[in-house]
Length: 64
Image (tube, rainbow, N blue to C red; front, side):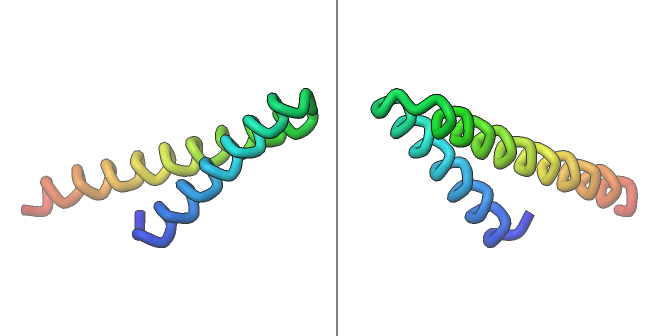
């Protein structure tokens, strides 16, 4: 996962957290749900990239 991809995922996760907190503060269920959804999407993207990196590391270990 490149630095840019990591930064984008982290920014999306932080934006989702902010939306969720604003939704909590204003009692706006839609905004709260939207923020939670953004956080989940960012975490899923990060997990997918981590699996991809782990696969590369395993492949590289066998190539040596």
